[in-house]
Length: 320
Image 1 (cartoon, rainbow, N blue to C red):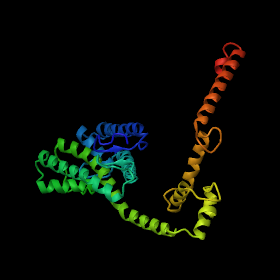
Image 2 (image 1 turned 90 degrees about the vertical axis):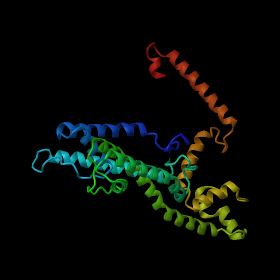
Image 3 (image 1 turned 60 degrees about the vertical axis):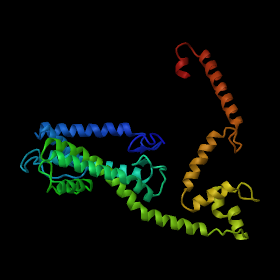
Image 4 (image 1 turned 180 degrees about the vertical axis):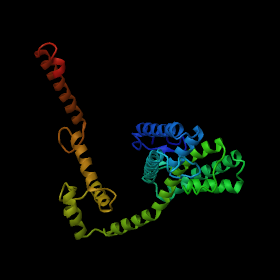
């Protein structure tokens, strides 16, 4: 894993290769929207940031009066607001999907990206508790009009993206904080709920796998032997390399396919990759493959140099 134990969120290898480009696009959208509401709609800078971030988190407290229905800006404002909400839904959904799939961990102690949903939910619980306590204490301090109970209610309604608008921030500090908090809270809380919702599904899948595995008896018989050696699925997958026996690896691959853990398409992709690495097509990857590849590269370089020397000056580089 990359960044294991280094922070609140661990990103697994291969999870967010496109994260820099995504961050640039989202940041540009947020900046453009803030400028639009600041200079076109004429909101203050704080209100512009507050409105953009709370809309991006799909909350929308409704405490700001943007434009009148008769204004010629009403439809541009609605259009920008809808774009922000759609992007917010996409980000929250994508983030939740990565966490549910085990490619993002919300806790530094998470040991495995493929851990059961129940374990990941428990591991993510400290992140939610931390956000709740942080939001409650900060709002209680920066918003004089909010009591402790109202701060708790406000934070919970923000985390759940309820946003009734009956309790809102009045100070600039409170608006800036709740703007950032609403985005982070929606991402984290939505991901945790996704893990919780996955618990009964994983339990049902585990039961189905146990039933499928029970179809193979613990003691070998003629029917089981024929299935492992010459069964229809074994032939389709090309697993049995010798009609006299079934190896442990062949049996394991067959069971993984039968249990639905590995798809036939996955095996096909792995075989295609193996064929590219198996230079001598012997069915094994050995040092001989390295030697053949090195010899092939030497021949290719020599041929390129010969071709370059035969071509007229100035055209050899283009051909090579």
